[in-house]
Image (cartoon, rainbow, N blue to C red; front, side, top):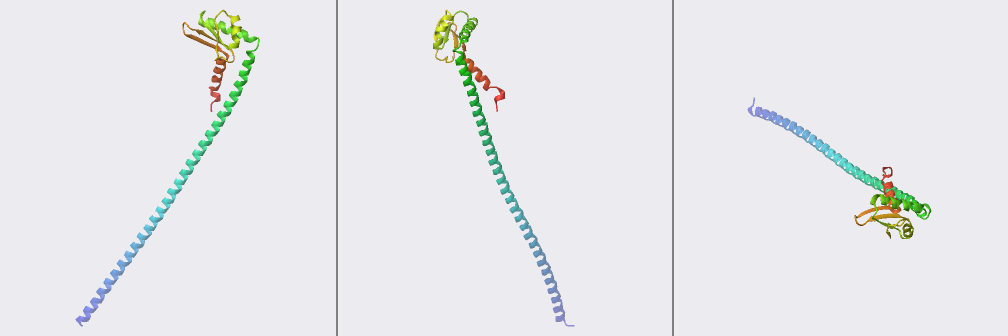
Length: 194
């Protein structure tokens, strides 16, 4: 046996073992690269899906905000239209009442109303007061009472006000105040609120 041939044979087996080991390592590295590549692809795909979902959620939130704003605007406009219509109805209703009060102030019963108002003022203020009335009622009141009667431009519909100047007391029995009080009480009713 030749030593050179033996060495050559051993060298060949050694090369084969190294080549086999290198091939196995190459296969293993390729497998790792494929796994990493597929994991990176999966991560990239997952990131892409997340970005698309985030975009969809952002669009959904924007659409919801837009619809909420539009619904709020519509609700406001409806409430405003209802309030305006209700105000028109109330104003019309009280305009009718005001014209009824104007007709009443021209009737025979109006003088009785003035007499009752003076009597009520006497009960509440005593004897020392001045009667305030609209200008065209001054002559009627001078016939009904011995008190001083003055014209008051703030009284438009009729009735009287009584003023005790010495004590600083004032009572308003005018039809204007009665109408205004009723209008305020009517508008403040809970049944009329939105």
